[in-house]
Amino acid sequence: MLKSDRWIRKTAREHDMINPFSEKQVREGVISYGLSSYGYDLRVADEFKIFTNVNSTIVDPKNFDEKSFVTVRTDICIVPPNSFALARSVEYFKIPRDILTICVGKSTYARCGIIVNVTPFEPEWEGFVTLEISNTTPLPARIYANEGLKACARSCSSSPTKFAKRATPTAKGSTSRSRGSYCRSYDRGWRLMKSMRSGSKLPSLSVMPEQLVAAALVSGEEAARRLRGGDRLASPYNLPDSRN
Image (cartoon, rainbow, N blue to C red):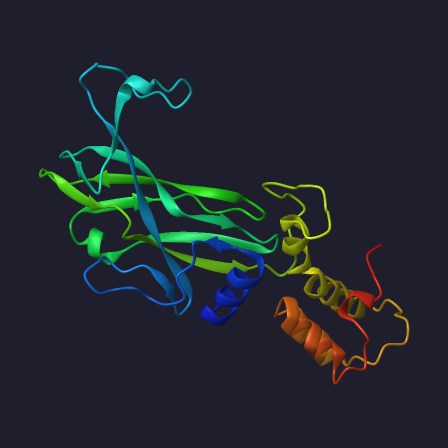
């Protein structure tokens, strides 16, 4: 299930998921960036590594030679014909445990033959995003720093992964605690629903089956509200744990 602009805005504000965060699309005079209906358009920073064959090196994924590129800092990066550049995002991302983020290129660059590749942001990963920029044309291409480059869409899983990209000790007020709380009630609602399907006996609980199904389709505070069913449950974190 894709996450909407409301969820992205709320999570960015309360848990610093995207920093710096633009609450609306910025378009005037720039390649657009910021919050969209079901995603966020990130910006490219002004640091670039441009591949060159001056030193006649071989690009080897297992033994990468830094002589393969030159490093530049500029507001406008010129990528040579049929060449490639590396960059990073302006924004720093902190991905929740039940979220996988996929990025696609912006049409503004795609129409010019500029292909931008970004690997998925895995659950609980955080950091600046490495951007791979490929100029597929026979002409030099301009990349504008501090402007939009990629559109990111966030998808929520049916239950949190066991394999987190980065797990840190939980501490009061820590980022890792906030990330884990996004999906706790959602995860327990999902486990309750699976137990009901399997015929397992559950403790008395004033929650209807359809509410449990709904809990499997939503996350965070919305799941907690639906499970309460009019505040009949004191807290979403007091739900029985049905995991065997």
